[in-house]
Image (tube, rainbow, N blue to C red; front, side):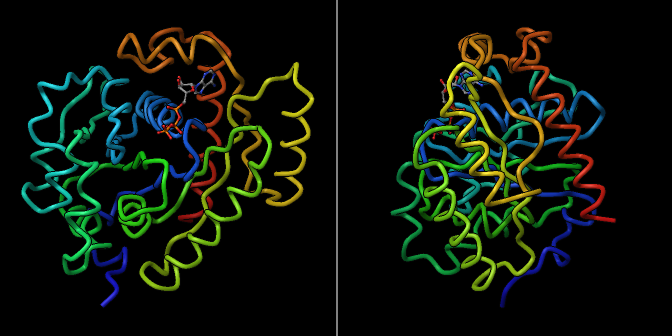
Length: 269
Ligand SMILES: Nc1ncnc2c1ncn2[C@@H]1O[C@H](COP(=O)(O)OP(=O)(O)OP(=O)(O)O)[C@@H](O)[C@H]1O
């Protein structure tokens, strides 16, 4: 039976958004961390689930490896409850279920398990209350991302302004459609955010125009600029919003959060 969002205890008041793109290095983790921080700053209770074996979301939030005794891996394979994996970050209202390197073996471990695509959805069937759960997906369309898409109500796609960007995202959109048909009828594309936009480079403008031409209003108005402060922040274990609140990257993520929350209000209205 397909488990619907309505039947999950957590979802009476939570929205689950998967941050996904099978292409590597396009800004999934950066977007997850900073969008979550900006939402937390306006009083939303936010949980990040780090579903990427690289664990960059966990590291970028200052969660040291030695404190990750229970990770998203344990939750996925059913060795731990979601609540056991939750760690509070230094940011009020923002918690994370960290990832660990074990997660890289999870796809193989789960392959012969029953309901292998529903593991995360089942783990999220809990009474823990958050306004938003953001899932940072790995750069592939394997079983980990599939679990995120089955658990989520919406997908937010960071898209780097570069050649072939549109081709990659079309593939992802087809996958979203397939997941919708097979496992999760409620899933929808929340929006596409253009990342690492370089205003000195004509290619960025061309890609942005192409993507807007194809996806129309699904593309958020906010564009995340390429900004060195954004790339420096993770090595300090901080979201860029804490590292340098006034830089162009921080300002863009604050605007993006405003747009996402506005779109949320119209989606759930
Ligand atoms: N707006 C930006 N300006 C400058 N650097 C950025 C920006 N966004 C992301 N980066 C940098 O680009 C790299 C890739 O970003 P990020 O880790 O968020 O991508 P990802 O899609 O999560 O990667 P992966 O697919 O490997 O998980 C990182 O080094 C990050 O610091």
